[in-house]
Image (cartoon, rainbow, N blue to C red):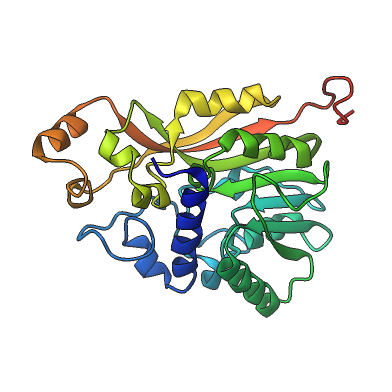
Length: 278
């Protein structure tokens, strides 16, 4: 299996390409960076366009949910968006938090940061900023965020446990998150789970739903709620690149499922002694 450093470089390269493409191209490709299916494979079937703050220039069609819709953002909140891309969720969060709040987008890819900053400048927002960084080591001080959102990003990160630890660190006591992500029920076939392109396409990087929820709890979060769940269907002509006819039939008739989930959880109001969150 490709190591973590190589996977990060694959993701960075892939999403640098995506930053230069239009939404329609991204939506109709299995990995967002080139057509690889004659069918439309778009895990972002939710519609952003009716949400306040929506900006079409910032919508690259890469999400797998609507976390900002479920995030319970209040006026004046400080919101962090993990994997902020061209800024779509940040601008929707800004519509909720208002001019007195603050929104910080963090993204690993310089091309995405440039695109997001250009979009923010066009919109004239002085309380939305974008920082380049690794969400396993966020460029943010501890205890600053009221809310964290993220849309189809943690599945791209090898060290998911490290991200949840960072989320706990940067949230204020009683702060919360709402994140949309891709998870599995049942094991993927080896050919899919080992392929780096499918990792960048959000599938091979997904982990078991049960493990995902356990990681959240193990990192100290409480009141964990699956706010929304939907199945993701990968077209046969993509799967056939990885599976022979017999494997494909077995995969489709088996118990394995690929799902988009939106999960909510809270940081406790008071944590363990010495943790710094009381």
